[in-house]
Structure formats: C-alpha cells, structure tokens
Image (cartoon, rainbow, N blue to C red; front, side, top):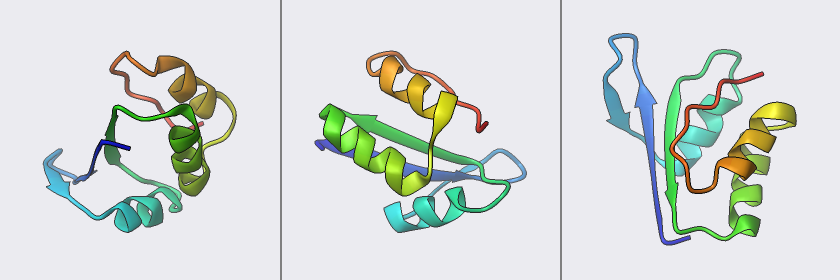
Length: 76
C-alpha cells in the first residue's frame, strides 16, 4: 500500500492522527468515529484492512466497490 492515514474524529469533529493499530482498536468498539484514507492500494491489501477492521456485509461491499470514489461508509 503506497499511502494510508488514520484519523480519530472527536466529539467536536476535530481530526487527530492515530496509529493504524489505534484505528483497528477504535473500530472494534460499539461506537467509533475514524477516518481511514487509503490510496494506491491493491484489492488484496484493502480486503486485509477490512478484515482487520471487522468490516462485513454492506459496509465491506461499499468499500470494495468504491475504490476510486471518495465516500463515507456508515457502519451497519
């Protein structure tokens, strides 16, 4: 993967950089607000990220189909 950035979105809607592990940990909680920006990736890399984040069903499908289109994917 050529470029990735993980940001936490706080209550005031400010973005704060976090580690990739911090993003994974946040996504395991019931309520998570995380922005993950992935660029120039292979499909297998994206699928591995989605597995780590626990994305399944419609959110996973939307991420895989969006590939070149910026999107906000709500958790199901």
